[in-house]
Length: 115
Image (cartoon, rainbow, N blue to C red; front, side, top):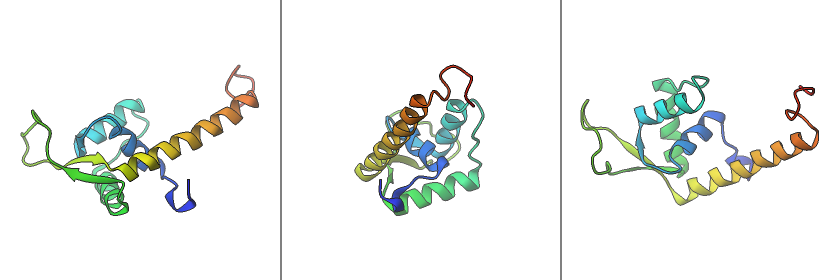
């Protein structure tokens, strides 16, 4: 992955949330919170600023609400990965997988004796 495409941790989680579905902001926030067992809470300012940055980078786009989308609480903006965003996410997953392979080779995290 090119250095200018390195993902901030919270950007990775947002893109991962959109890997298999379109979601609105609150649903992204909830999906990340659930997936990280409460370890990463995307507060509205962080989330919506990040969505704006990711859209500006061309990695996500605003899309039409899917059929059956919740309408309560006013109009919601839904987001989806762009082809470029899918590529960036794929590259980041591969980068992280390579780091995990190296850690495993060093026996880090395999038996609890190497921290």
